[in-house]
Image (cartoon, rainbow, N blue to C red; front, side):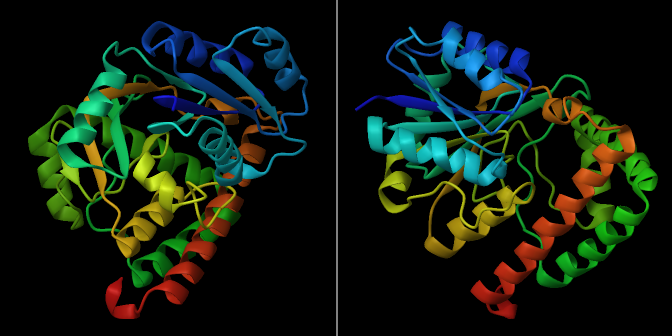
Length: 304
């Protein structure tokens, strides 16, 4: 049994993927495995990675013929790691993540011994915005709230520049709230949101999807890390509700941490700014439509 397998989903931005692997080489144990999944990049970068790491016993490169999206791409790596290595933990991470903590793996093991988690999330820090992204929520979105949010995103789909302004304001708000516990508390109360402090451990909270750690006890029960499989967005909400329904334990612990250079994949899409925003909004809408259907089908209205 390999102790830890890392699944890294690659799409075009090869510099970030190499940077991520380099950071793992400096922090992960020598018996850890790195499963790099090229998600149909179509630019030759997957084959470059295959050639670059062909003699590296820690690295396995999987080449997908087309872009199957975030969930299916990561599930391909998860299933490969599970079947080939049967690891104690699988870490599913974005390729624009940097690992810098030398005791990252020992801490995962310690946290498991303390909590017996099914899914674990680290502190996810974005240097660009000086923002801590996790935990996301204690109380997930309800069906009524989701319907309202879906209408908002349908509106933004027709007005992408207004969505761009919203993104900027959201980033500024998160940066301010991350710096001040008092401001975060006041803002959360005004908005009726959960008051969460990234510096504390929590159980059964929504975890940011840039880096998720799945224990072997989760693997024994689940063929897929993400199920359902939205192409992009809302994976964390699907995962939270699935764990809630099946009684799986989700833990957030800030004693493990990573750096997230957010949205690197979007920077490599060869379309203009409006095109990028339209791409994002199309998938924001689709993911929320899928989530709404899932909640209505899987949960009674009084549960969500």
